[in-house]
Length: 137
Image (tube, helix red, strand yellow):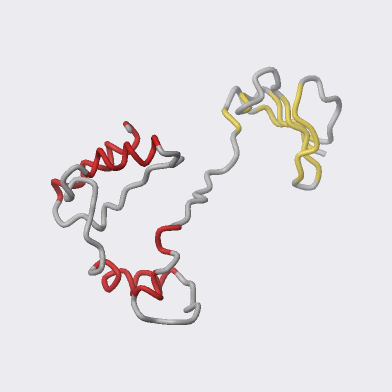
C-alpha cells in the first residue's frame, strides 16, 4: 500500500492524501493512516489524465453522403482519406458563410450544448478566427 501525501487534489478541496493499493486508488482524504510507502508530493497538483472524448456526430452519414455503403473500417486513416471527398460536399463554414456566427448563436439558443471548430475546413488562414470565437460564444 502506498500513500501519497501533501497533494493538491483536483475537486477534493479538503483532502491532501491518496491511498493506493496495487495501482488502484482506495481512498482520498486526510489522515488516511499507515502505508508501506509514503510519497510526499510537495504540494503538486493531482488530477485525472487528459482525455479527449470528442466525437463527430456531424460525420455520422459521411459514407452514405459519398454514395458508399457499409460500415467501412472506422479507422482514423480511412477518415483522413475520405475527408477531401466529403469536404467537396460542404458549403458553409462560420465565417465563410454570411451570418454564420449568428446561426451558431441561434443554435445555442435552441439548445445546442457545444460549439466546435474545423480549422482544416477553412479555405484560407483569415477564416481561422473561428477557433477563438467558439469559446467566446
